[in-house]
Image 1: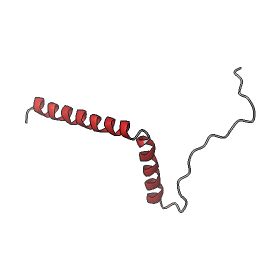
Image 2 (image 1 turned 60 degrees about the vertical axis):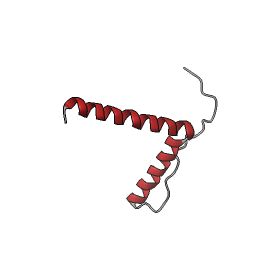
Image 3 (image 1 turned 90 degrees about the vertical axis):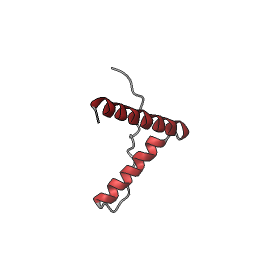
Image 4 (image 1 turned 30 degrees about the vertical axis):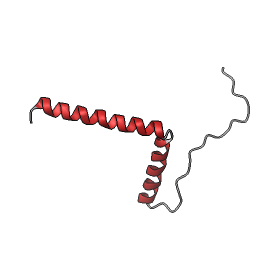
Length: 68
């Protein structure tokens, strides 16, 4: 296989992958969030932690935030 054919094959594969992922994102907008949650749960399970993964939450401020 020549370099030109190899490059063309890689480029076509990349474009096809991007089209499939782009279409999936349009159909299911929260797909990246779902994938992150699944990966987080798998990571916790693989690590042997007895508790489920926690969501990262930002603590509310005690008052209005003003710029200096």
